[in-house]
Image 1 (cartoon, helix red, strand yellow):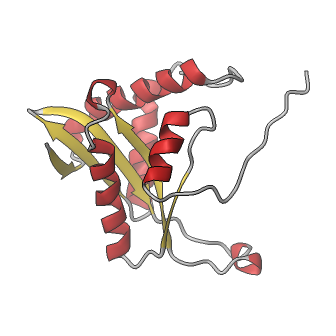
Image 2: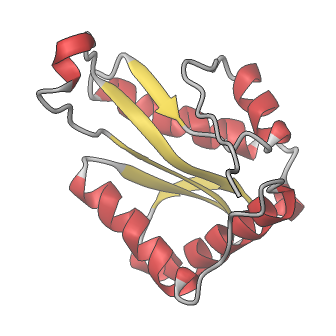
Length: 161
């Protein structure tokens, strides 16, 4: 397996991985709120990659035998004036996507991808890495905890009707 930086020739593979992840999220969403909208496949990858470009980010692709088997994306988002009112604001990167294809999970690919993006953030002076994980994605939560991540915030939801 090799890890390479994103190139446009991988766009369809990125789209495939994002759809695979969203289909999985839909399958575990106990609130039944997630969906794959009409233009998800065409637009989501472009939105994510534009964000990577705009916010000093990277997208790394895991390739094995000329097949894309995973990816990680991350950005370094700026703080705004409000953030400084109640937060120390250390430089931090944010992992925006981590996907390993279903058939390739359990072989350490996610760990390698995480290490690559963390190395990038560290090279730019980041002190922390943030990420969001879907509350019902127990496998991902366990994986991130093994990698040294922990919860700092919780987002609660309540159905009103």
